[in-house]
Length: 398
Ligand SMILES: Cc1cc2nc3c(=O)[nH]c(=O)nc-3n(C[C@H](O)[C@H](O)[C@H](O)COP(=O)(O)OP(=O)(O)OC[C@H]3O[C@@H](n4cnc5c(N)ncnc54)[C@H](O)[C@@H]3O)c2cc1C
Image (cartoon, rainbow, N blue to C red):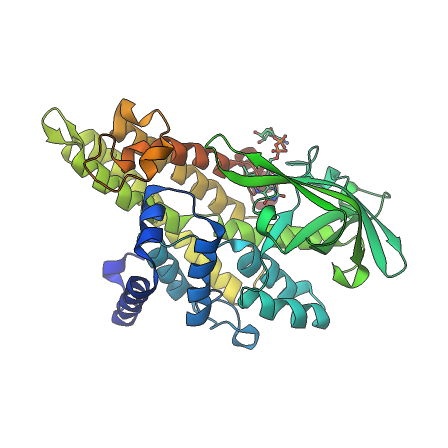
């Protein structure tokens, strides 16, 4: 829903969010986010701590687990205001993936131990699904867990593990059975990242940032009590987590931030004596993107209502992830069109330039890095080709 068509109550809520941001978000952090500069973990933690104190870290969670049972329209407005006002993006692993998964599949001891620690930001999480030889074909994963008394002994390797270098826990898929279909021999484990036998190797991206890792597990002992659900039933749980992940990966709030940045940039770059913002080609392209964003936003709202009502989300969430990731890339591409050839070199030094009239203003200097970053969005959480295949099979029944 567009902000100008909203009920007065919601408009007032948005105002409150903006006031909260103005009081709590340090200017230096805000500037870094606007410029697409990588934040250090401490800056993200301090901001997430503010959200925890305000009850906005997991506002959609039920009250009994420390949330506010915030309605989807409100949650969406909250996310949108946080993104539009250059707040650091909160990691989805704990609040949007492990938390909801444990509420659905965890036993009482797991809920009592983990949920309060997620909502209070005592644990950072990472996702251990992909392996060097198992990405799209995730069911072929080979990291093995063998039962020994009350523990599993885990051996293998996970790759592209975002944020493993600061995670306290990893939710992981491991092979516990060899019979039947590959999906039938997989279990879902929660692994403490401080356990002996875990080592982490950084992978530096094309943008120069350290976001990913390869994680090696060598004789890692994991209590059976940290298995979620039955042995060999991990695939069902993993699919449910992916459905929630894909709802989050619709990236609507991020698109709003990109839209705002793009408009500002287009107003400041001239073409044939006119600001690009006034040129017909730009206005047409921008309008088409805004329409796609509004349509995506309406779909996300529908799924969020379904999730809040406790309904299964289903494979259709793949559509949101597909559209959202493509839309972010379309915004980045148009930004490059507007910035022109001067956006081509990636200039990390210019990230730190505070002057708008510096030789290469930051909006242009960071364009390439942001564009490189967005390339991964059509791969992470399941590639576009895989989303198409799943939508064809599971939603359209083809
Ligand atoms: C930004 C980012 C963050 C990530 N974070 C994590 C994380 O935290 N944890 C984690 O576990 N993983 C993470 N990943 C890994 C991600 O899930 C995998 O990269 C993804 O599932 C694709 O697997 P792959 O890289 O092995 O590519 P492959 O599966 O080898 O695919 C290569 C190409 O072949 C295509 N392809 C494969 N199979 C088919 C098919 N059947 N039909 C048509 N085309 C096909 C794919 O679409 C792709 O274009 C992340 C990836 C990115 C980019």
